[in-house]
Amino acid sequence: MTEPVQQHKANRGLVLLTTVGILSLSLFLQLEFGLKPALLFLAGTGLGISLLHAAFSFSTAWREFIRCREGEGIRSQLLLFMLASLLFFPLLGNFFPQISVTGALGPVGISVLAGAFLFGIGMELGNGCGSGTLRSIGGGHVNMLITLIFFIIGSLIGTAHLQWWLELPSLGKISLIESLGWLPALLLQLVVLLALYGLVRQAEKRRHGRLTTLNSCNSDRNVLHRMIFGPWPLSWGVAGLLFFSIITLLIAGHPWSITFAFGLWGAKIWTALGGDISTLSYWGSGYPAQALSSSVLADITSVMNFGVILGATLAAGLAGSFAPAKEIRLNMIINAVIGGLLLGYGARLAFGCNIGGLYGGIASGSVHGWLWLVAGFAGTIAGVYIRILTGVDRPMRVRP
Image (cartoon, rainbow, N blue to C red):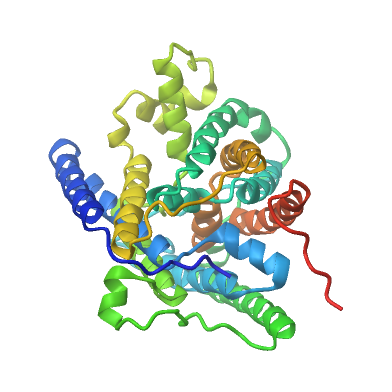
């Protein structure tokens, strides 16, 4: 089950401050870097609002399904994948030749297999995925800063080792759209996603004797009030993420991604501290070298990440749920450190996190996205049991 968004009185001061910050940064981006980064920053803001108001989470949803077969979170993700495929495949398949976009394609190999598995473990230990970490920080969960710090460190370490991993066996990049054509590939993908949706639905109903609808929301507020102040049902979260994802694809020319920015931030911090990464092939050429030599605000992924954080902060201020009190135990800190390292390292090897690698990959018709799903879920199962062994969660109940 996804995390509930508590209903409180809006924090007007925070809402005003965040709104001014969003407007000021978007104006600065437009003046200094052009309209495109400003629009993508605002798209990131919309993604952050959608993530927080709908409490849309990969790590929590996967954990709750593994522990007690609560499936609404995973069903909402599968629905998002289906709807995104319907919109992405024609665009990526050149059905509209006047629109030039590229998909998130990664190699189908050991690098992605190992990286996604490690990311799945890290997702549970760090208590957040790529988008979830940004959303939680924006929502005031200061403890998630520990996860983010080590997420950044793990990402930088991953860039140092990536070349070695890429030399391991791989089938290369495989695009269903290029191999089958966009329409047959779309039909095949929808059949598989619908089958998975049915399996999750059946498991949930068998365990609980009922299904939680994706339109359910514990609120007596009217539609307009909920739209602004939250909470949102998961179906609204799907709609919001889908809308801003397609906006991102059309403006940026590629799907939404998150974790490249973390490696970039780590590289810039390390360089500022006097470190030398010039010997790393990852940072020696192409876009990484360009991004490293430019302002962080010139990097689209970083700009969108800032937007997600500020959007989540705005939504938390509107919902009155910013910075809820939360106990931070030593075992949780240790897990956050290890989890953050695994998240960053795994995302680099897997060519993205749950957004860039999983969501972006599947929506792009890349087979590596499906490999990410299998390996990431297996890692999540391992992570759930590690949480139990380290005392973060109680043991799972055995059904009679």
